[in-house]
Length: 369
Image (cartoon, rainbow, N blue to C red; front, side):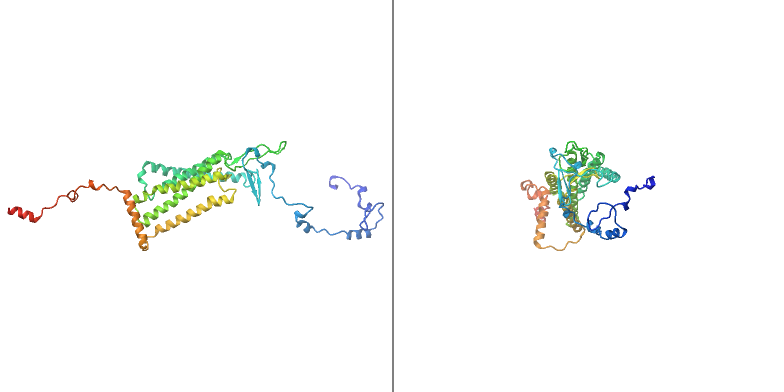
């Protein structure tokens, strides 16, 4: 007050007020002395601030911890039937979404991640497209066991093209909203939230392409190691490996299709704010473990086994039943690769053996006659 030119008023002087004594409220004139004031000050209880800080808030004045409560700006209208949920700690809040901006990453971090992913996706698209076009020009040039590399390139081409589309789409695929306010008359407008579920069609389409072809590429890598093992380890020829190509295609395309349909049926599709596309397991750890981590670990172990077995030159002696089984497989594959004509079309023995040389005895008897 002195710095602003004001003086302390006389009627508010502390010495003119009565001093409390014996824990009773005092009225009347100030007849207390300095000593009585000091004794009163000594009687004041000491406040334990540390105890107040460490006090359990659930036991303070009957309060209880209700956990996370969804802010009104993050609420999703129930009439839209979007099935949003937000899990914070052990509590799952229904009809609540995570904001697209300003909570996990700053705008500069998002822009850098989008640019980084978009540039690498563009380079991957160009390189894979070159590989696929090279194969289309001369399809007989790439045979088994190296043909799975072509299907690997096709899968990565589709995945990279999807990330390029997500880069160009901005937040229109990975985010939704803002939605209408759930409470009428509120002055706080809703904000954009991260996409969840399968009701947002662009997000669902990009998820199907990215997940299906990424899982198919992993299986084609396993098939590549298998064909390497058959060619280098078991010494199978191109024709023998190619005769089983239908089973390779069945495994590479059917397994990812089943997993993709299962995820769509469960609605475990989430938007990725860093890449601009949608994927599975971004908000659900169980879905991430079941549909992404576990299959990839299984593919990695299986492919590594085939790869190491292919590098092994000398195969140890095998038991007789195993040798008989391998011989039967070779015979079946050989019969499928060749066509044997009927016996009646082979002709007589003379036709098969050609013209017989003359018998020396017949020649001598002919000359004698």
